[in-house]
Length: 146
Image (cartoon, rainbow, N blue to C red; front, side, top):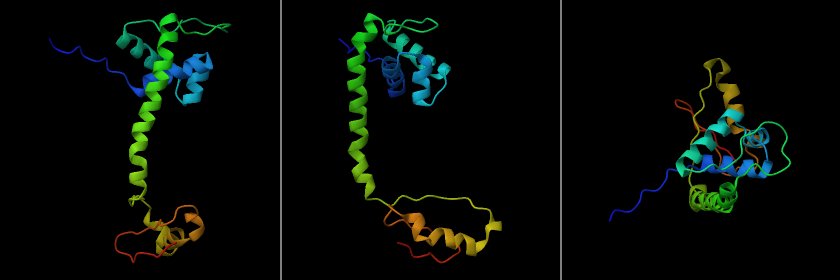
């Protein structure tokens, strides 16, 4: 007997749902997540479709109670745990990545000139809190830094 397929759930959908539960309104949840109300609504609709249940009450105006349905209340602790686990998975590799050099490419118009560019690249004040940060650009000597 084949295993049942898992629903395709995203961290964005679950984060929108959890934020709606925390804030109590689509507008405030959207502002907190720095997305539009339509963006949060779309994520919630997709989540409801994937799970096949209604998770929150869709109504206009001020609410005196939680917008979550009984199914939404049931999902909430699991959604919060899911997001926490996703953060743990991400953090597994953060410490490993911290030891690696990360390159940043800047596209700077040539009108700035070499002298100004060197001043930006080697100014130790601009590197505060970022030990080992250095800059280089093709065709020029690599500046020493910090």
